[in-house]
Length: 329
Image (cartoon, rainbow, N blue to C red):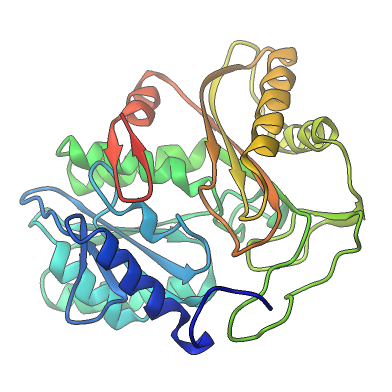
């Protein structure tokens, strides 16, 4: 294992110290706990949006805390959930009087954490609503699907609606609309190493890939020889469009996401292949997002997400945002 760190057990807190030092004008933490990550800018009367999850996925989750997006994030250990107490303290800190939306991935530990935090907030008179991202088509039926990179579109929709001073119900509805219209397929080329474990979390042969592999190393739907970018894109789109059929002339936003060790050049190869393959199907790409949006430490691989858009969704996708990790003007 070769990683730039001090002690494996200090990996998360050392990372957070670096972030707070580098971006002290934009982010801070609540209740004296560095893992209670919040925006330095509070907006009275605005619905606050709180997310959370394990470290190892930057810029997911904490990277989307900032103007036009989220207000706080519970930071767990590597691939581990934050605690209910952390989400509770974050909620108290960011609540502007209009309620708090919990928006996070569909993982058992996170669900338990946010449900308990919601109960604690209720005793303090803070209204909360919850919604989970569940966009990973290859991980099962809709109710059990993992939340992966497609949660970005939910962040964008909910964040824009909150910035426009929508009510808690309206912000929840915006997140739900994005969720209903988003699907993701991902694949891995290599494993990754959790610092405190010190060895790879699964194995792949030199010329092997895993279609449907989860961002924590969850098994995919097949392992086999590495395919070309165009072949991977075609299979991914077939899967996505079988699950969410689109008609000729429909418009989407396309997200090409790198998992941590895939070069931006490779992601743009996939983006070009995806745009051509979608055009062949008569589907229009309104806007493309290419880069790292939800990683898995140093795992090589990528995911493709599509989000069907109408005029309202386009407005939310175009809404300007600014965080230390992601800006859109």
